[in-house]
Image 1 (tube, helix red, strand yellow):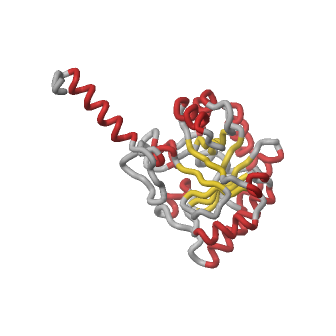
Image 2 (cartoon, one colour):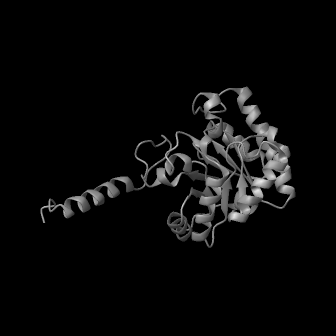
Image 3 (cartoon, helix red, strand yellow):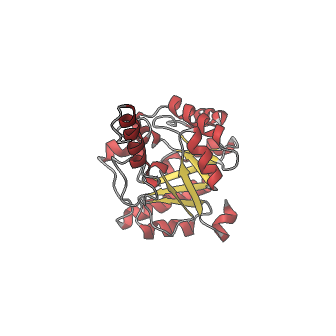
Length: 249
């Protein structure tokens, strides 16, 4: 990805958790496909990502792999699956065996030993700093990061530490745009923003937010380009009424 950072165009990244979605995204020309632990909420109905297990991630990564021929597949290491370097590497290998081309974990400089173990084993690594969904319970909600000079410096230090450890890319989530832009200029890795402004090397969205498939919640920065939920509701209602002879036909 270094050449894309220098010359563009921006990296287009979307999430997938099943075969048909992954296949469609691949055919659409998406650059990278993320099997994100956000599937815990938009696919499995969990309140946050902390309930997602390795078994769940392996299951969904394998399904996505079957649908993808072209785009690299990144898989999230879920909550509590990378507490030590040995654990991180063992679980990264499991995700690769399931079909991932790269793995991602949340955290900055404090996780450099885990990152180093993964990278030294030849597994491409993607970092994730800023708002960390796996830490939502201890932080008491989803909060914008980089609002103070101290926070901004810490984020920059985290990004540089991940970059030096060998990260190919770093997701910058819910970071003040100016800080995200500074990080993008400071690191060799490609930055992939989500709710972090336009001055990153790429953008990622949860596909359910992009296509309007999860109407019960949508982050304010996510622009829906379709309303799939409404179409499913309409088609299902028409089917029910048709079987009952109540469709007016």
